[in-house]
Structure formats: structure tokens, C-alpha cells
Image (cartoon, protein in one colour):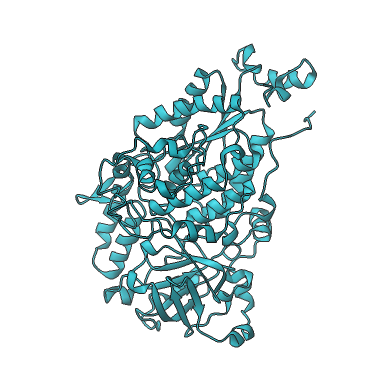
Length: 570
Ligand code: FES
């Protein structure tokens, strides 16, 4: 077969001379002919601490690529550290995806190994790979090992929320809270709860883009490097077989990803990411697919935030394949993986080694998990709730709204002793959608009012047009679409209105008449949102970002340009 890279390197003309000559930094002559050029799209960065170890993973990929007769090429790509990037890493996900897509297309490469870990990195890499459609395979960077504090395990993220609420509720001293900080991050790797990073690694495997059995391998585990080596070899084979993402990523793959998302009790963030990836592939995936396919799937994984354990335990219990084996009747048996074989083929020999961590189908953690999609006059285009992370007694609730126009308004008033709020109230936070913030931050799991925490209240119904951290929990309705800043009904809710949540009926309604709702107009500040950027990426983003129910991708990035570039640079 003629390699794509031959369009740069083959021939004796001036352009081929230039392309080869500048790459001759010890590269042998034969490297330019007949050897697949494999980019290693690497999100390693000191400012993405969860991915800082990926250079070592890349070295193992390189060895595998060489061994299989390919030429490995380091390609540093945009990296996003969830805990560091302001105002929210989600603002930059599409930018990272766009930059990676263009780099893959612009360069003389035949295939790519995608190295990600922290929340937005695997989604942005997969969005890029889907749009450029070159042979691609993911190596997830893996979770960190379990840290402990005062003899008990600490879950990244989840325990930050829990401990900080304990400080506010007066059951933990500030000094103890600060002391726990150095115990939280025990090793290299991403968050060890079933947060977004763990979820997206596992969902990427369920989609078929990771070699089955690899996702969830802890970052310090030597088996990760072994898997990276094998994946490097596979990348060369993918090019020779011309196995591109579009040859195996189908609606059936997304079906399996949704089943996996539900069975692992994964993050709600996976919904926007999967919708965005599907959009790049032209696959008709909607919010309703998540409810239809996922909401009756049992949650089998007892990991924080829904359960007790952490990713190290999960891997010890045998990981995703063991989970999927329990729900294999719900999977689409025809969905292929990057290896060319169906995912179902990998489930024969996948025993559960610890049935406390990965439950059997007969003893699920939660009988019906998944993500429920709500609609109603408050969310005409949909909203999400994760029932597994919610309080059962709040899944059907009518309460008085206490409205906050933006996160700053929320912080300024939530602990005011005079705030008119009680345990039955519904906290409403708007201005946090894709356009309004901008970037749809993880603020929907609003901290509860201090005075209610002191009374022992630990959960309330919360409604927001933003997202929430995959490590968070509570009765939180999120991703409300359209968002307030796009003129959605959330923009006209007033403090004192009653809101009705009925998860079983899949409803979220403002308890006012249709006539009154139609008469209300939002104030200008709510429509514009908190930010009205003048220039740069934020301007482009606000002008083109789609709503959460479409994956919050930019409208002009949906779909694919393929990998063709016909024109030369000279
Ligand atoms: Fe990177 Fe949680 S902060 S995975």
C-alpha cells in the first residue's frame, strides 16, 4: 500500500528533498520509504499533573512502534490540567481537539497513538482522531494509587468535597483538612475515583479505541508500560490494515459505551464528550440514547463517588472486561474494537476477582443506574441527573427555588445567615452553561448553605446549566438546556417559584402556568451571562458553541475533513 506519508517523502523533487532533509537527525535512509510514520500525540505536561508521567509511557510506545517496523514521532499536543486551568478546562476542550486534529492532518504521519489521562485529554484526542480519521489508538495514562489519611483511603476529588463540607459543617477542623492535602495524591496518574478521567478511559475502551483490558491500569503499574509497548506495535498494524476510526466506530460502539458508562456508575461528563465524539463521526447519538440504553443497566462498580472503593481496587478486581461480562447480554455483539475483533470476544475470560468491588449481576450496587434525561418546561432540550449519586428521598420533590445568577452571586450569598432557604428549597444556579460562563464549568454540585449543614442536612435538590465533577455526588440536575444565557427557561426562574423534580417521570418543571412562563422575560445580564469576551478563543467559542444536549462542540467542528491535504508549503 502507498503510505500517506509518501506524499511528503517519496520522489526526488525539491519538496520531497526538503521534507526528508529536515527530518534527518540520525534517521536512517530507509525510514522514509515503506515504514509507517506513527505520531505519539502526547498530552504530558507539568501543568497537567495527572499526565506528567506520559513521557515514560511514550517511550514504551516508541519501542513498540520501532519493533513493528514503524517510525515513532513525538507530537506534543495541547494539554489541559483539570485542577489548574481557568476558568474551566472545558472551555479549552474544543480548542485542544481542533489543534490536535489540524496537527495530525498537517503532518506527514500515517497513524497515531493518543496518550491522555486527565479529564478533557482523552475526549479532545478522540474528537480530533474522529475528525481526521487516521488509524488511531488510545493509551490511557491510568489512575493514581490510593492515598490514605488517618488510616482511611482518600478518594481524589470526592473526599475534597466531603472533607470541605465537614469543615463547613463543623465536624472537621481546618487544620485536619489542610493536613489531608498532602495525602490526597499518592502517585503519578489521574484521579482514582470513578470521576471523569477514569470514566473516559473506560468508556474509550468500551467504544473500542483502547486495546481491551488496558484502561484502568494504574499509572505506576509496570503493566501499563507493557501495554503501551503493545499498543505501539498495534499502531503500525493499524496503518498496514488501513483500520481507521470510521471503520470500527459505529452506533453499536456508542451503545456499548453507554452500557459501560452505566455499569461503572460513570461521570455525567461522559455524556457531553460522547455526544461530541459522535458528532465528529456523523453518528446520530442523542441524549435519549443515554436514557433508553443506560438507565436500566445495573451499577456494578462500588467506587467513589457512588460507592466505597477506588481505581486501584477496581483494577485488582479485574476491571472493565469483568464488568462488561456481567452485562454482556446488554451489549451489541457486533461492535468492533481497534484490534479488529468484537469487544464481545474479550469477555470470555474475564472473572471478577473481588465481588465487593465489582459486583455480580445478581448483587448489583444499584439495581438501575445510568443517567436519567429529564425534560419539562424548565429543560425543553433536556437535563441530566445521575440517580445513583442522588438521595432517594429527593428523586421526587417539589421545592421553592432560591436563585443565583452566577457563581459569584452564589458564593456571596450562600452562607448568609439571613438567606431564606431550608432543606426543602431547590438551589438554582444559572449563567454556567457553555456560553454563559463561558465553558460550562463543574459548579452544579453547589455546596449547601452553612446553616443547613450545621443542622445536619447533607443533600438538597440543585438545578444548574453547568456540569459537575465526576467525583461529586448529590441530587443535582445539570446540563440544563437551553442554558440561561441562550434564553432557556432557566433564565426566568424567580426566587420563590416552585420547581418540581420527578426523576421517575423524567420531568423537570417550573410550577407556573404556560401563560405566565411565556410572559416572563429574562433580564439582560442573565442573557449575556457573566462573560462577554472581546477577542480570541473565548469570542470564537461563545459565538459558535452548541448547547449541552449536542455535546457542547463548536458548530463548525462537527463532522470531519478527513486527512487529505493536497497543497504544498513551497
Ligand atoms: Fe486530572 Fe482529576 S484532576 S483527573
